[in-house]
Image 1 (cartoon, rainbow, N blue to C red):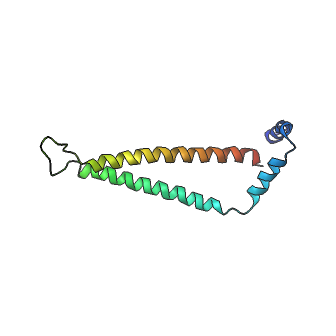
Image 2: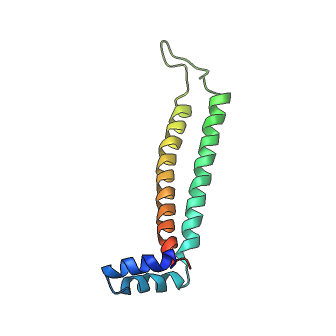
Image 3: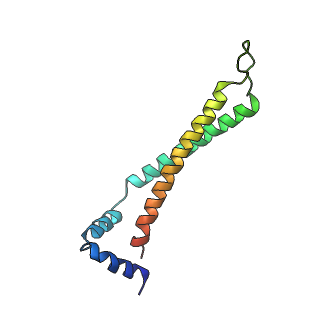
Length: 113
């Protein structure tokens, strides 16, 4: 007895299997949305990487401002704002990517043959 058969037998108590067949038919249909979703995720990762590289470059090369007011902050605000933006957006991106990956794994294990 394989794990797949025992999983199907265990889940057969929940229903007649019609929802499983509907999902299986939709997964075997031509996929149009998949490449676009992958392209959006890759473009977001590239954009975040470029913004992170810009923040790191500004930190190394031009962290301090040339013009300082009396008693003012000697550091450029753009460097730290860009770093904060990258941190916040990367956290949201990582959460989304891990959620999508987990859902794909959750769908792939029972449907694998």
